[in-house]
Length: 317
Ligand SMILES: [Fe+2]
Image 1 (cartoon, helix red, strand yellow):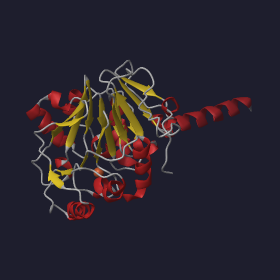
Image 2: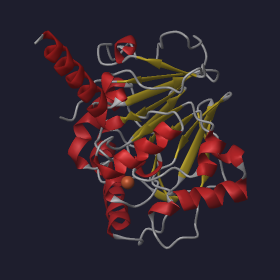
Image 3: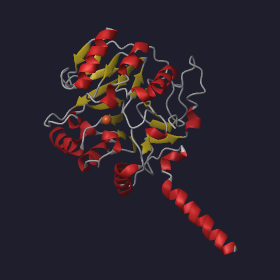
Image 4: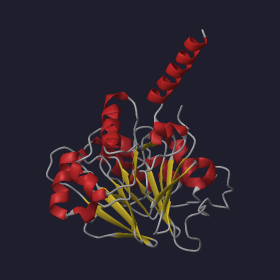
């Protein structure tokens, strides 16, 4: 009887370990034996508990104090992209998700102490990357909305132009050859243009502070990366932290994995479902687990020397 009970307990334990993704534990996974990206439990960050006038930018060790900090928050908005970058009192809203989780985005932005954005940047005109802009920018205005596609590309680009006109925010074509300053940090842009589909032509953003980089890949696909890495060289795609392209729906390009040399990876998508399983299978083969924003917003901060990465409690049921 006792033997049967032990076997049953062991089976249940194994089942739990197989079913629950590692990052669901609240402890983001970082590639073993690395020290550039240091994982913190969300308790260590106390993101929500801090007062608005006591921004959580007072980062816990091991970040330097008294130097510019680049903060990147990938908000928990479902399998969609909404990424907020902040450095030296300047802020950029890179995509915005859709309207389903706009209240979460509003709370994250308020908690970061942001009142307005120096720029909003849309990586490509798809619903899951832009529909919440009108709501969010009506609360936190942006000086400029940068886009990478003609304003008549599709119904979403037309919607964005119309809504920005109503808010009095100018829509400007982004010059991808011109890096953009964000306080002490710099944003570099790349784009694959030889496709008729929209996703592969998404804007790719490499944010750099000091020696540290993060690569934000929007929905570019593996053939886009294979081509771009070949033409631009690996440095253009270095990223200590990598956003999994297209929400982690697709295989990562081999060239991108080698170029990024990432120590941590996050996906703005689900760890379950067939696409999620395929993606996780690929990560396991290269000894990774990802952090999934659908399991809680992901907060990343760097002082230019190290990153800390933490995951907040899940908000979407
Ligand atoms: Fe998308």
